[in-house]
Image 1: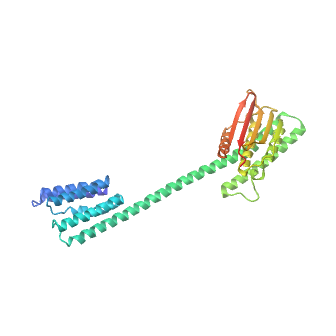
Image 2 (image 1 turned 120 degrees about the horizontal axis):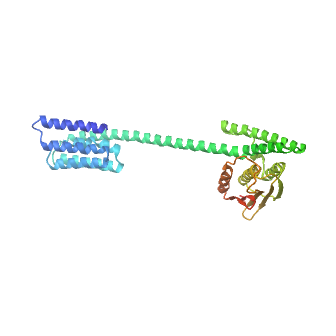
Image 3 (image 1 turned 90 degrees about the horizontal axis):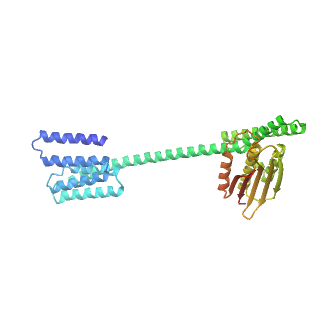
Length: 361
């Protein structure tokens, strides 16, 4: 915009000089207008503008004019440096030097003393253009850095939200579900032994949930766990988690059949199996009918390890009105897929089956 304003003023001055000075020829005004219009193209097409200025100067020299429009050619060196790629900048400066030498040596348009003046003008103009180009480059780099930082911050926030959601669902939701189901047991039965077991389960689950909430809040606030508060996943292994699942479901009245083999797996596979067992246990507690039949199978395979948890689930019978978010199975599929495994969850006849196949390493 500033360039357009300046060139408009130059154009107005040229027209005014032509109208007020009878000695000014129309050819001089025409070449001046052509040089001005060519310079204005730098706002849109820098290469076309530079080429146009060189052509105007060449035609002016061929027409036997005084070469006054060389001031546009030399002064525009800074605009070329600022707006054009390096190859065009080098070509433009070389062509300018050639035309200047030609005008001085062959056509005798300029005196020999004019060469240093033109060289100085080109150097000053190019230096200003280079400084502006460098400043623009720094500004663009800063803008890219800010954009990268913004994307990293957004990704970090999203990752932290997913981690918190995983903690809430995989750990706390499990305990809260057991608390809710044992509270329903207290409402339905009068057996003192069952009452005592449910009260003990509610107390243990609530204590564990509070401990996990404190640990998670500490992670969110300080970014790391404390030495004294370690997550259940860090303390547990697959076998102990299965034992806990069997005990929890038995306390809720489930009939359990289990076939559990000893399996040797990596830490990542073990943590994923723990998540799967907790999620399946929570779903059985929430959605299976009263006193369901539950079968659990953990065995080693040629490909790695297989876990199957199956429970009776008639289409018209649900023991709980607790809502299902659908979040747990989706996240489990992601975890299993990342480790090269496969998770299937489906209803067959009157059973609900969750099967996970994972490599052992």
